[in-house]
Image (cartoon, rainbow, N blue to C red; front, side, top):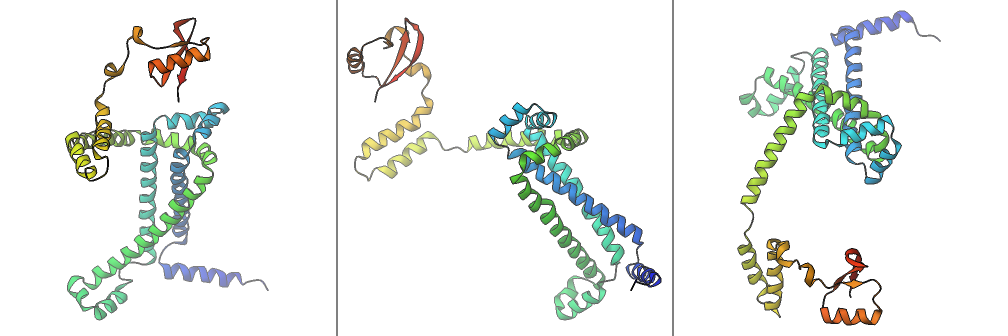
Length: 303
């Protein structure tokens, strides 16, 4: 039996009266939120897609020499700017979702809708009456519903799901999103540039602060002595550990050997002569040359 068209139309009109909002506006709002969620998901997934590419993935992209591959490589050349573009774009989209969701919810559930619930809460929890009025508590409930609802949608469909997908399809998603990300990079270029500059400034300041707070070598040496002095062969261990600490202060000039003092072997040197050379020199690594010393062909590792 076919449904009565008049009854269906009456149901739509009744729903419109109950909601207090034009069904056209409601439909447009819901479609807009749906499209924005898709955009948020794609951009969130792009962050994982671009930054999870392995060395092999990058090498394959370089060998392909296709337009999407080249766009991906160009974007990865400036990782900070790429990350700033993704974050700025995603935040703008999320803000738009929150604003539209709040507008729709206020249209469907206007001010005063939760007055009954607010009155009941105040009657059950007396302290709320001294903090909130019924109207203020009603608005707070409205706000919490909006926040929790939108947060659930954004976290599930705008963050978790797309990032899980991007983890297993990073190259495919990166190619698909390379053009949109380039467009967003140009669109939000001023904001992204300011974010990158600000990040570098903060990083430099924090690096200087961290260098000032670094433990001195004297403190490390004292800590070594206090820690190792009770063990057997403590003096030998202390000397070894202290030499490791001091190793960073050793310059190349202090350990380099002049050309005339270098011990090297011709690659045609017989084995027994080579053994004598190794024993007499005492070195564990000896350069090997061919014809003259300027043509070094390798290093002999004595073990």
